[in-house]
Image (tube, rainbow, N blue to C red):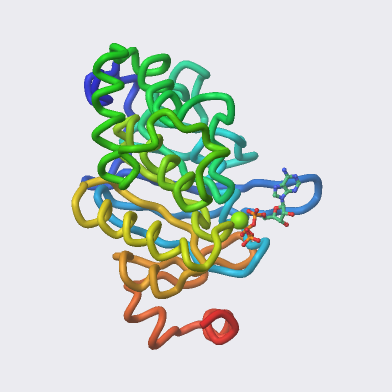
Length: 261
Ligand SMILES: Nc1ncnc2c1ncn2[C@@H]1O[C@H](COP(=O)(O)OP(=O)(O)OP(=O)(O)O)[C@@H](O)[C@H]1O
Ligand SMILES: [Mg+2]
């Protein structure tokens, strides 16, 4: 079942046209550590937005909030016009179906074949027929260059191959939003380029909105429409990559970039 025929829960009233993700006044604390501090930002549909910033600044926390792996302490999160937070469990599950995520550590199901890794959620979560799910999975594996690995187990693949399966698995859910958290940082250097090329292709050839956390500044410069610089739980500077990488306004951005570039 395509995601856009899913039942539409109650709409949030204040949506700006074209906006797909909005965080407003989002605060997240772990004990007395305030990780996100009244954070506001939005991402328009089809945009590719990169989050950069120092370790511990809350980048992964944002993606985990969007994946509903965490709940904020305050604030609202809206995706595709519907509240993800605050929202009841049923609505959260519906909204969550439109979001795919790829993690640093692949997180494939180790006891399932590559093909099954990709077909499992479309069948069990979206109610797709197994035949259709298998056909789509084969197409996706072809796209990521792993058509011959259908029957392999994740442990029989290289890190780069596992990550390409994880990307295919996320795309199999036909997400409107793809969240990418440092998806190449666990890879051997010679495998990084293949995964980044695949993501560039996806960015070019689909209308999926991408929100990505990366330390690969060249990649960020290449695929981003907008870069958000994070520090201490807030966006301190935002703009197109040419601007952020060449003429950052904020001292903290300059310091951070001179350390990582
Ligand atoms: N489950 C948790 N329990 C307690 N503290 C947490 C938890 N998850 C994250 N934190 C804390 O929240 C802060 C932000 O973590 P987060 O993982 O979002 O940072 P990050 O910007 O992704 O950093 P990195 O670039 O190193 O991945 C850190 O201080 C971290 O210790
Ligand atoms: Mg992180």
